[in-house]
Length: 414
Image (cartoon, rainbow, N blue to C red; front, side):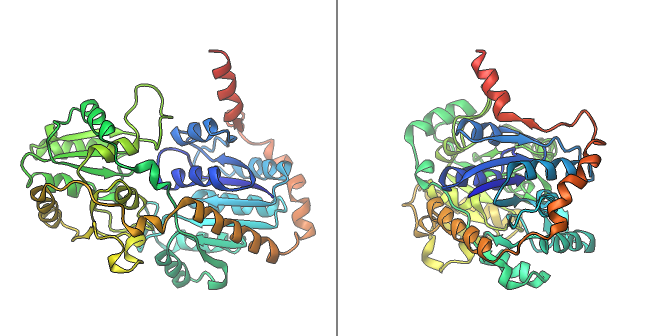
């Protein structure tokens, strides 16, 4: 079986890291296409031995990307096309259908109650999503919570399969050596109580709540592991509240040492360096950062996390559900600060989310989807040829780039 994964971008993020982890485990030949932003995770996949192409898509409405993607899929003779994230699902499902691919799988990573990857869930977004979903064979939900949301939207339950995100928990095991070195790197005092926050610095993550809470926690420190458009606003808020000197922006933190030279520590290093984790997001689809924090032995204060909330209450004793306000977080984090206990045994919840088991479940999804997928319609078989003239109209500045080849050539010239 030959699989093509299509994802909106490959900067540092939960869905992007999840794709990389799965590529290491799945027993199939696989390629990756990123519509845009071939960032740190693209480099990591390539260093793992994978192949990544950048479609150079100019934006959400760059329709010229569709014939290029269709032609790429048709030439690759893929048995399965697997799409990840909203824009990739819209373009990838349609392109795969036009290219005559029988088995089209999509993973829904980020569907909240009111937003989808930061987009308000208005009639337009929902309509496009459902129209695109009908082109596929199976939609994978990363948690039972997401499966229920999809069903409420109108996705037929027979087309929904729950395959939870998975992690390599050993990768996040606490390291005293990493704690010392990362604290030194980030300028954190050795004994300062330090709160960690992991994720893209976007409005939907509500990280401003933690800055407000920090103002009520004298002597505590706060480390953000992530980048995003809200960084300057968060910095300004911290300065305005008088806590700027106690907030550290660590930048992109990949899961191992594949970041470009001069960038921040690894994610595992940050999790070893901090004393607890805080997740103020009210719209999580899974809560991968929470599970990673628990794998590092951290206590985690969170608002919503389907990965934990969908399990029996005793599965994660270190996960503390709290209110949405800064005061609620200050109260919970203050209790953790006073307790002075920084590490717990890895809970059962983490063991439930083993990436090897996740990959095995995904194999079953592929095989079941392939068994019931309809044969391509004759018109679909001809679609790639019909699309070729349109492809010639694509801007010359946006060709498809094979990043794997480019990286190999650069490394070979050193």
